[in-house]
Length: 328
Image 1: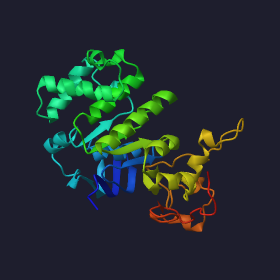
Image 2: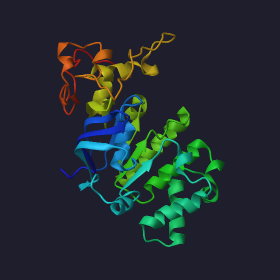
Image 3: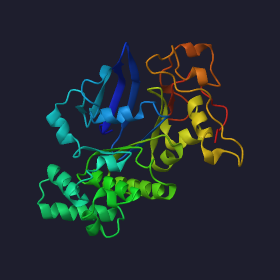
Image 4: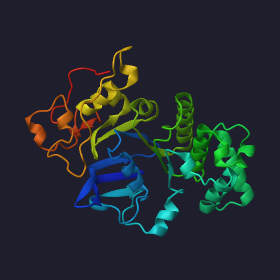
C-alpha cells in the first residue's frame, strides 16, 4: 500500500486560556490515501476546522500547544517544518477551500490577476501560459464566459461563482491534497449540489485527495468514500460512508442521522440530541458524550478508545455500541 497523503497520529492539541487550557483535539488519528475523498463531520466546536488548519499549519504560531502526536503530509513532518518549506507546500502540495470565498479572495484585485499570481508562484510558466491555464480551469468549473470573469472583481460575482473560482484556484497548482472546510455552507441547496459535483468530478479526474469538512451528513454522504465523526475534539467513529450512514454504531452518530430533516416525519418536530457539547477546558472524566447519551452505562466513566466494531473497516470509541438494527 502506498503512503497516505495525510496522516495524523494520536494528536493532542490545546489552546492556553486564562487559568487553564482548551483541549481542542484529544487523541485524534486519521489518514487519507491517494485519490481518496474523506469526510469529517461533527457539531460546531468538535475540532474539525482545527484539524484542517493544523494540517497546513495555519494556526497562529504560539497560540497553541501540541502535547503529543504527529502530522505527516506526504511523509514529511508538518509540525517541525520550517516556514520556507510550508510556503512551498501550501498551494503546490496542499491547498485549501474556505467556507467564505469573499474573505479568501483579495477584494481589490481582479480574479485573473489573483489566479495568474498563484499559478506562477508554484509553476515555471509565462504570464500568457498562466492566463490560458486559469481560463481553462474556470471553464472546467462550468463558468460561462471565463475570459470576462477573469477581468472582474470578487464582489461582482455571486456566492456560487466565487466558490467555483476558489475550487479552480485550489486545483490550479495540481496539489496532492485539497482541504475543503465547509465550502458549501453559505450557498443555497441547488448551487450547493452543483459545486459538490464539480469538486468531486475534478478531484476524481485529477486523482487529488480531498479532506472534506462539514456538519451536514447528507452532503458528506454524496461526496465522500470514507468518513470520520468527531465530538468534543475526538474521533468517535470512522468507516466507509455507506456503513456509517446505514449502520452507525456510536449513539452520537445515530443521533446526528436522526436529526437530519430528510429522516423526519412530515409536521413532526425533528428529534434533537439533548444537552450541549461539554466545555473543552473542563472535559468530564471518561466518555465526553455520556451526559447526552441514551445508552450510557457504568463503564462510561472510563475513556473509550477507537476499536474495530460492526462492519469491516468500521471503528467506534464506545463501550456500548448499538448493533441491533439498521438505524436509517
